[in-house]
Image (cartoon, rainbow, N blue to C red):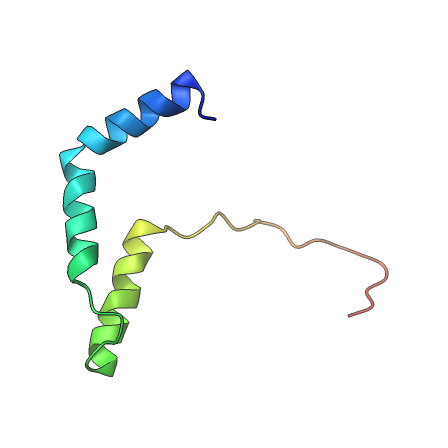
Length: 67
């Protein structure tokens, strides 16, 4: 069962014009790209949606690694 906060978030999401447009774009995308270039463009577009995660600035120093 959804909480009241979750219900409110769903309602706000449903009213979002940008979200609606994103879903419409997604419906028109073919899962089988016609060319390798089209597939690369699709992967590139995903990078805009899912940004790179933060990378640890320092290496982890260990004394014993089995791998």
